[in-house]
Amino acid sequence: MDEKKRIIFFGTPDLAADFLMKLMPRDSFEIVAVVTNPDAPSGRKQFLTPSPVKLKAEELRIPVLTPEKLDANAHEALRNFDPDLFVVVSYGKILPKSFLELPKFGAFNIHFSLLPKYRGASPVQSAILNGDDISGFSIFQIKESLDSGDIFVEKDIEIMGKTAIEVFSEMKEEGAKALLRFCDDILSGKKFIPDRQNEGEATSCKKLKKSDGEISPDEETMGSVLRKYRALLIWPGIFFHSKKTGTRIKLLEIKDWSPGNPIPPGSELIFKSGGDVGLRTADGALEIIEAQPEGKMRMIGTAFWNWWEQKTH
RNA sequence: CGCGGGGUAGAGCAGUGGUAGCUCGCCAGGCUCAUAACCUGGAGGCCGUGGGUUCAAGUCCCACCCCCGCAA
Image (cartoon, rainbow, N blue to C red; front, side):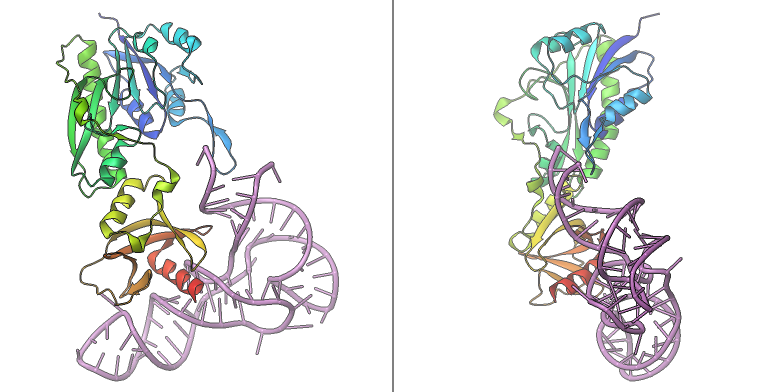
């Protein structure tokens, strides 16, 4: 009977925790350790909170490492686990070269775009923002430079008209299957013919900022607002500042304005027509399903309309 | 002690010591070819909880609970 291969898993957010869970009980390999970011302040009271991956790993009784820096100490700690493979899913730190040489079968990352497009921190959101119809995920061997290694597995996912939640959900579903198979394959010695990334086609995307969610509805097109909504709804969401009410207003759920419903001429930024509440944009309108003024509880469209009328008159 | 907003009808809000109100929704009726529009009527409230001040508290004072925005 072969010895089980030894994997060290790197990851931090919820998404990574889901991948960890799906990689769990296997005959061919085991997760011998999990590396995640240290506990960080979170929530209104700023309590120190462990990462979702740490919580999941503890639940699964896997040893957890939370190095602040990937230094010599961390290197030593990982070497002691005698790893065969590193699997990285949204870890949040860049692995130095000396770490990449630790596992016998190498270090691999699953990235949620069709590399070399959208290298960096927000591939799913960026693809939606750009209005792409197709994205996907890539499993590649990690090199020192970010998201640039040779691609071993790649799969398309249709993203047209979908929200980030829906896309992530599919990425999770399909990606976990692919990653599982990949781990089995590579650890059993299967030969891959990896694709080198075409550097000329590479694009990159930055980490999202809170301010990316700010919109100016009457200066933007419906398409622009809707793409931002779909891309950013997990975080930071979309919001605008209203001079009339003096508050910031989040749009929690919006959709296309129903075509049968006339948009009254001369409508204000927020308007009501029939039973629906609308948001006027530069080239049309969107329906507000749910919104939330700063400091208030979330409101369905008609409640938001009531609030708006009372604040603006 | 991180900063701030709030808790009054099903929902959204007004009400600064003296009869509990408005808008939306809901129910009934009316108008109408018709309606999400309009008219009439109606139901629906321990005003977050506990104490205090007062002849009198939704309102002033104290404590507590809960919700939310920022921040991370």
